[in-house]
Amino acid sequence: MTMVVSMCRSFRDRALDRCFHCFPCLADPARRSSLCLKVALVTLHLLYVGILFLFYSDLIEKTKKEPWYTALYLLLFFATLVQYFITSGSSPGYVLDAMRALNDTNLAYKKSSVASKQPASSKNGSLVISVEGSQSGRNFQGSNTTSWSKLVMDMYPPGTSIRTCTCSYCNVEQPPRAKHCHDCDRCVLQFDHHCVWLGTCIGQGNHCKFWWYICEETALCLWTGILYITYLKANISRAWWKDAIMILLLIALSISIIFLLLLLIFHSYLVLTNQTTYELVRRRRIPYLRNLKKSRGHTLA
Ligand SMILES: [Zn+2]
Ligand SMILES: [Zn+2]
Image 1 (spheres, helix red, strand yellow):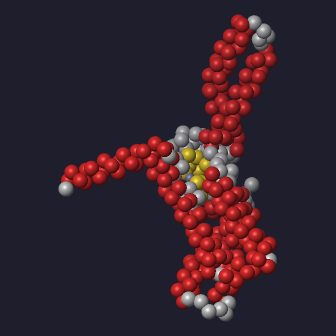
Image 2 (image 1 turned 45 degrees about the vertical axis):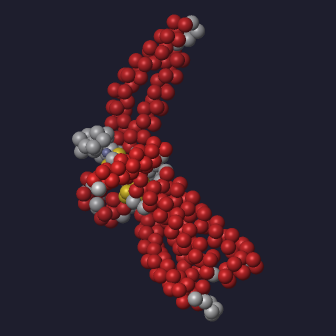
């Protein structure tokens, strides 16, 4: 018996190893759960629309008469899924990436200024350039850190200590409104929240995309809800189990619509007042917001 169990285990481990070898992204548990969520979301969308077209024969008839109506609905359906994947795959704007971009800009500037000073015609000349380039690259690492620090410190009120705005996990200076995300294990610019549903953080780089995703998802759910209600109201003879499935799906859809509408209103308010969820919720814990007067506090510069 023990032998059979151990054989099963080794077979399972070998199968998993082969699977991870073919799809390296599956080896990471966080990426695996994110992938499972994406598959679940697509399945859920296909289920709702698939059942609608399967049960609702009037909709097929309507499609034949007014193809634009169904075409528009399907366009919204695909646009929502595309927007979901675009938002999910987009970068929220990491502090380290901003630092790296600044590094690259400074390095390119240094290289171009060094190259313009050198005659670069002989073999030796090119050697000198490469050596100098690497040296400047090394010096640059040091000068670059200060330039990032200076850039960040200039954003804070005078007298702010560098220690208070340095992330203890990444060891980088955070600009105002940035926060360390423990799920991504990185500092995010204009951090809003970590979205489990999308498997990414929402920050400066993708807040706009996130708003459009919620907007499209709300519109799609509302339209689907209207089609479900129209089906249930239609006076045609049909099997009771079809009604039961449609009612159950409609209840779940109604809960999603309420949640999505509230989320859309909340994020529209945040966009209009230039705030993030984190700033609104943890206002008293954020040093640069703590001393702001309440009347001015609704809008952030
Ligand atoms: Zn950090
Ligand atoms: Zn995150």
